[in-house]
Length: 122
Image (cartoon, rainbow, N blue to C red; front, side):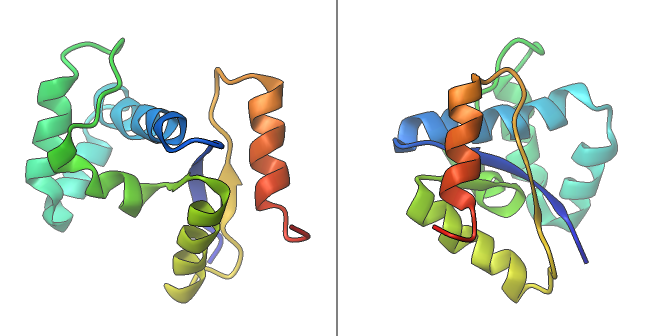
């Protein structure tokens, strides 16, 4: 199994959370009902509703505190050490080669940082 995992890695926790929140809010508000329905059916209905309530337009990307579990379940995010620990959970769950998906609308420097810090040689 080679899942593509949305990635949000930064030197500081707040920036990483902002990027991870973008991933979750974008998928729930902009990609039709597939992700909403799928997550709701898997026990995350309240969290999905909280994200939708906090993002009345496609221009906002807030994941409220009561829905933060979605960041942990759906992305690899945080500072490099935290993100590497999270990535290990994907392997434990059966992923043979998780593919880190880089976020759009970020600088080349940010993307390089994510790639370098998650590189197996680090």
